[in-house]
Amino acid sequence: MCTVSWLFSNQGYQLFFNRDELKSRQRAARPSLKTLHQTQIIAPTDTDAGGTWITVNEHGLSLCLLNHYAAQQVIDQRDWISRGLLVRALSHFTDTNMLLSQLKALKLSQYRPFDLLALSPNNQVWQAHWDGFELQIKQPTLMPLTSSSYATDKVINCRLKHFRNIQKGQPLNPEQLRQYHASHAPEAGAFSVCMHRDNGQTVSFSHIRVDQSQVYFDYYDGSPCSTDEVHKTRLARLPAAPPSGA
Image (cartoon, rainbow, N blue to C red; front, side, top):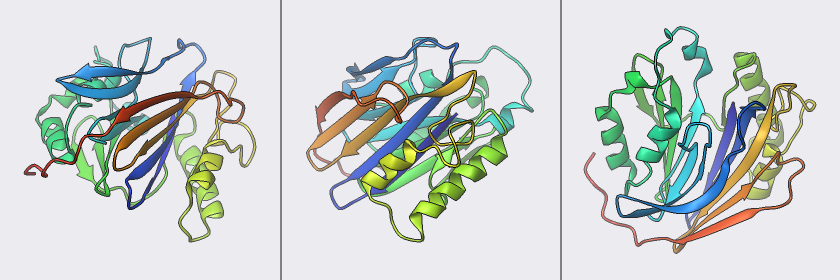
């Protein structure tokens, strides 16, 4: 249950992410600096399972996870590994080619279906779509990407329609994307981007910005419609390395 949008520029990119969760889950730990395989990353922590749903590293590579609920309905129950642990394990790579090569080599049958979005500062965005049987790597044709465990197709269509209504065929600026992620159209509820249900809600909003020299992670611990306090984490970006082979 999440929504993600992004915006590229000559300097890098910006990433906007709503995390929707059941109210029964524990509150996540705010983003902090961590070191994985000698690479510095910024990531919040899911205190229920120990992984994360969004991360960015000192190379400017971001990852974010959306659950694929439609596929989960046809997968048998088993002892799953948390998808958040997969995101954390992949968070140290220098570029998307290395990341996707490693992802293809993993035994993904241990994980529930997901969509993993990867962004790099060289105007690359990739979507890894795992439906429980097959991994597809593609460049997303739609923005935003969104998911919901409730009325999945109807919720996705509603949020896409609202996005198209404010876009009006023109590129959106960062402030418009921020407003979209805090919006309640058509009304505050299960269908709105800032989601509110009896048993779940949008629990956080993440805004990642990567430019030529810095990585910025602004984290709003609560629904973006009502939370003004921001937790800021900063990281110096390393110079771009030569691209690896695919």
